[in-house]
Amino acid sequence: MTKRNLCNEIIEGFESLKKSRLIKTTLPGFEKELKTKPTLSSKTVKVIRNQWNFSKQEFDDHQE
Image: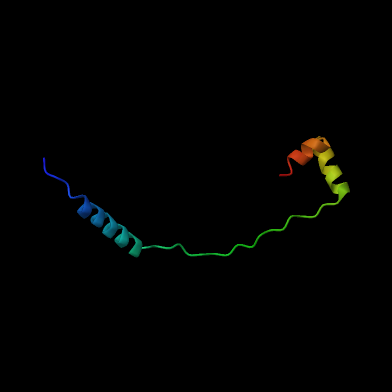
């Protein structure tokens, strides 16, 4: 068996890391407009709850 030269293996590893970092590819960036939450009146919420047959607790649990 031949002895391994760990220092050379570590140096080779760092060199290959350096090469891979130099060949970076970046994805094009984009901006996205965030939507705001709709404002609902209490009457609208009550109508929706009744249409879905949800209790107040069930409706609150599904809000998140």
